Image (cartoon, rainbow, N blue to C red; front, side, top):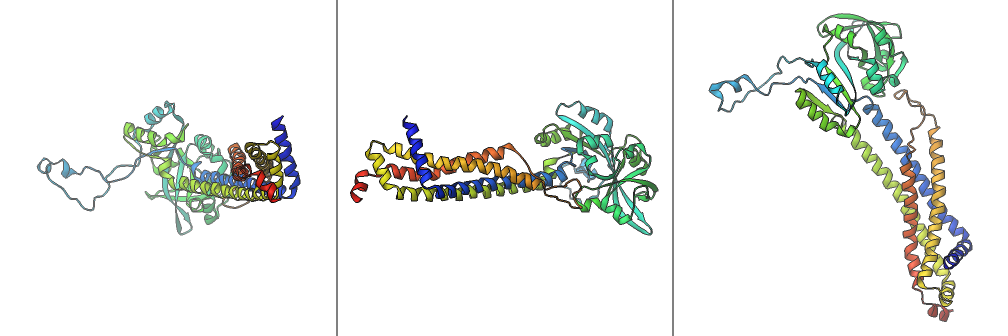
Length: 419
């Protein structure tokens, strides 16, 4: 019965100051709405930007790096074993880019429970012949099925059919920027010259657009067999093994393990793309900071309104305490007022935040660099709504706590005498 009375008194005070109450609730609503919208949009943008690189990047990449030998012949000479040898202008040895025994390595990796899948790859530097002009480029020999399954290759082919690479001999998918420079259309023949001076003719079967213009101006794709033919290599020639893991956070440990076990160079995705991860974290921190600032500002608005309400309701508070209400009861009344403003304003803020996010999600976003994106990116993560709801209650509780505590300490005798 006591709590019912406290709620009724709190409701009466809210209704008596309806305009101020609505202003405070609207402040909370606006803060939560912008908090949800800002985080949804910024995290959606982060996912989009990271996806441009991370979707096309292996979690672990195995390759053979061309580098000078750490042990020079003089180091193995007995006469100089105890000497300090200084060698200048050390050049790389005759080590080839080929991964030795690649078939056995891929078979062993497939049996690893941590691995989602693997995709072999060959990188072949070539010159694209445009009349008398030679354009520097690279042809990536890929396994079409593996690339489409693990690295979303199909999503980036804007024109043509990716499967034509494996079904049609001597075919190629050009980067969109490269195709524009060569004025090459689907079905045209392009001529390439390898580093060994061999000249080949390849049929264009599609365009590829990653969203990174500089890459699209030089890269192109062919089947592994076509790339091996270009380089004059056998069927077992592979330069890269791309590994996708079930848990991306395991990449640094798996890369180190594979490098030791297979005696090969290995690079994990965290090392290769650390700048993207850092950028995402910074943007997320900024979004949270702005959203929390909005909530704090709304909290100060509630604090000021409750302070004014206490000042104007001094006589009412004195009467309540004179008729038997304790200081704790009075404090509870004003806390109920604050939490009511916070809960109602927060609820509407979550609803309007969702509606505004859905509205942004429908706005057309067409750009030549991002062919797979048609609208602005939005992340509808439930955790944003949970965080927003909790913060609205916490902020309004703290905003109402100090004025409520002040009201609980009012001496009714002093107020009545003053009146």
